[in-house]
Amino acid sequence: MSDMKVWAMIVKELKEYMLKPGSISWGLVFPLVFSLAFIARFGDIDHLIPGLLSISALFGTTSFVASSIIFERRLRTFERLLLAPVSYGEIILAKVLVGAIFGLLVSLVTLILVSHFMAYSIWSLPLVLLYLILSNLAFSALGVYISLAIANSINVMTWLNLIRLPMMFTSGAIASLTLFPRWFLVIGLLTPMTYSVDGLRYGLLYYYDVIPPLESMLALVLMFLLFMLLSIRALKRLY
Image (cartoon, rainbow, N blue to C red; front, top):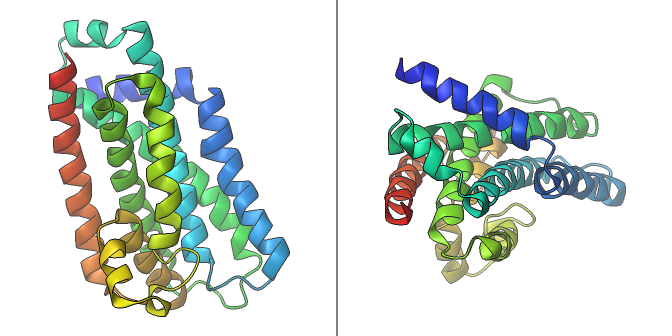
């Protein structure tokens, strides 16, 4: 019965927020345009593809969940959800899963696009899909937490961009972390995107820069669970 309630909320969210401006502009258009810009500039982009996929996942998931939560907080529709026979955990799980589904769709579109410009074939597609799923879950949970933790919902997108844009440069998505000083690596290890990039790099190209594949996998799972718990606490504080 609990699964049915979560699934019903997921279907409702997809129908209501799939075509919202925030979901389309930051969640779909930006990752694809960003990928096309690098393809046009470099042509052979094998070394950049893990980062481009992570960027697509990050912006796809967080933009979708932020759009839905901002809208619901401003219209005070969360109260109706809390009056229904659903728990805080079920609400957060539905929010995270729906964001991950949207982000996974964006990631797969990006993968199909950029794979045509790879000099080498994908080493392990199952591993790539596994890391994409884990990355989208972790990023979606992060987006839900930020969207609930910011007191004024109008400022959510501003805070998200303050977090997302630096992550593109501190995670190895654009340039390898091995090129930077050791202190810079410490910053990279604090961001979930670093583990996403290195995990996808291993699945795509059969090598990694900093984090071994199993450790990347475990880190993404732990960050997903951590942000889930933080999101539940933030929702309880709000309501």
